[in-house]
Image 1 (cartoon, rainbow, N blue to C red):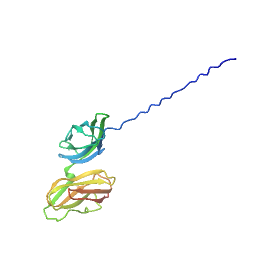
Image 2: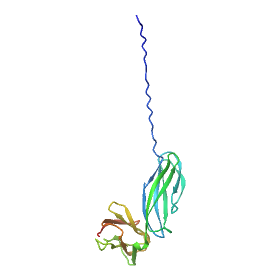
Image 3: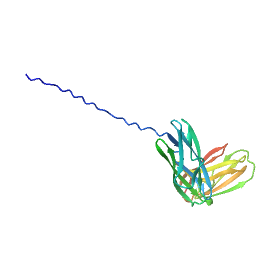
Amino acid sequence: MKKINSLLILTLVITVFTIEAEASLSAHPGIIKDTVSVGSNNISVMHITNSTSILAYQLSADVPWISFSSTSGSINARDTVEIEISYDAANMQSGTKYANIYIGDPHHGPITIPVEIYIQTITDVKEEYLPNNPISFSLNQNYPNPFNPSTKINYSIPEAQKVLIKVFNVLGNEIMTLVNGEKAKGSYTVAIDLSGYSSGVYLYLIKTPKFNETKKMILTK
């Protein structure tokens, strides 16, 4: 009688799970779009948030016309820092310029923030000032409306302060900055020319420390 030896073979399957950790740093906005007049500069703000323990960061750009209020520092855990970004158009021609901002994350390599800046000529916008005594803020409907290709926008401020007026397309993309600076009390008329833009609905926004309003205008060609 034959004796059969049974061989029990156990196969052990080991599954290795790879967990990819999230980046330690994040930035808002994730893409930067702005408008700067030829020969001037503009400033926008970016927030960098740290999701882990305290760590250091570094900022850089791939073009010389971008600078920062701080190029390096440290962020505490679950904290956010505010960085001012300056765009210098002193020696630039009109048109759209592209660049990248890099945020050095010591744990996961750099974060890339795309930058799109429209350099507008000063002749794109003309502003007239009437030193009267308005008692309230106002942003009037542009006239004429619809228009082709030029129109005027009137606004009033009852006290001196910084005024920002921008134009956006219907998708919410900024196409032009009309006003960006300190203004005296009074009424203003801004004349703009959208010869280089296609027909459609556009939005214009006024923003001050005490007043915000948005209106629509229609370009027809």
